[in-house]
Length: 252
Image (tube, rainbow, N blue to C red; front, side, top):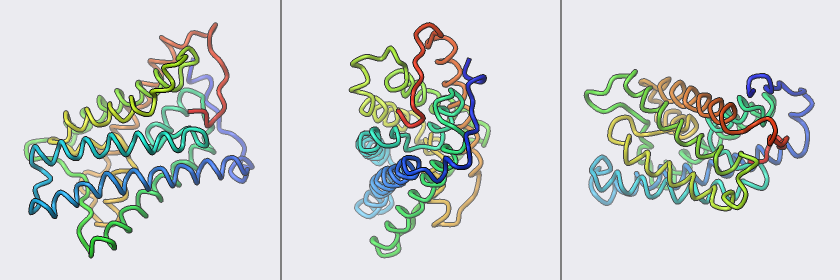
């Protein structure tokens, strides 16, 4: 059972070289991901006179995020596990694959990576706005929470199926691209309604730099709930105790 495997860890873990290297890898991966994802929207706005909310803009955002996440997960996989998302880290914690201490290190690194990416974008674009995530007209906060729960469930379930499951075999080779694909597909599904974050770090950076916090809690609550449900479902129903293998804390 995943709940019984949850571990706090030792405070000394925060100072261990491998934990700090893993946190740095998360910082760099998130910076690359957010710079490309958020930057694609800013570029589309510049080229189309603020047309990122058009159907073409949605497709461009989905493609940019899918490609950037594929790369971000790939480059961090051998160091930190390539979480690139506080919700993925939370799912790993709930499943007993990472301690709370290391999770906190990851969360700090991920949030800082997003903020730095948005600051770099604001500077390099000559002061263009890094737009914070927001709800579309007619979409309530709880509608968006459900959207985020379902989309993040799909993301973290994909992570478990392709990267965490000890029975994954050769399917693990395609984990980064599968994870990128599900994020791109979810953006096509939910982007027009609440921006389709699935990632609190992706929402946090633009919110800090633009200092816009309307309904920001939605982009934390939904992903964390969806992540926890996916982790518990996959652990309980598909990772049988007889085949379970102990995985290092950063091994996905």
